[in-house]
Image (cartoon, rainbow, N blue to C red):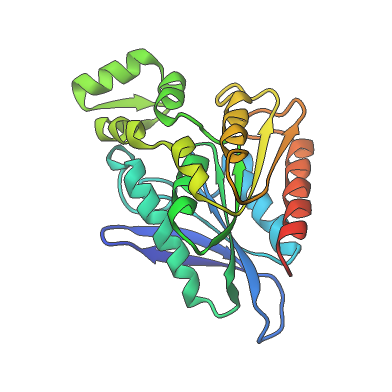
Length: 261
């Protein structure tokens, strides 16, 4: 079953879709919350998150995908977003799971793609409800990585004019300022549970070295296991049915070893 949900924050209304697997009345299912990335939405490029959520749901997981404010169908404007606000919104989304009795609140996986991976890392570092962390093509150095994608000229223009257009999205000056404060590599060591990293070998937007940077920090932890899976030839958004299928299979296989259904 898929149902539309609204998650209220102090100032915004976030739009989400909750995928609930078939289960008995008193049966509780582990949950997966998906955080989308830069200029994306809960649908994802070429419906990446729709496909992924449905595959995970068929395997028995409850999945909640949502739009950060200013994205997709949520309230707000993109030029007003900050990564600090997105972290707070992700926490509110996790809070909303308490309204659904069919969800096992002791078994929550946070999944983030690209910039959403950096957001998910920061949330998991301080939120003890998160039991597993899955990072897809994660941004390791948010400010440098996003400025590289947007371009130095647009970034400078944004500083001067307070906003700049990038692929139809108005990026605000405060967004870039908040990127400079987002340091997932400095936070990841605080998460002492299991982490799965997945990256495409041909990712141009956030090259494979990003995953290796996370892996290096994760291996320095005293607790928690981490795995890195590389999908050969895949790009940043897994723009192929073959890559999407492999992505789903890798996540499901890993979750099977680390969660109880």
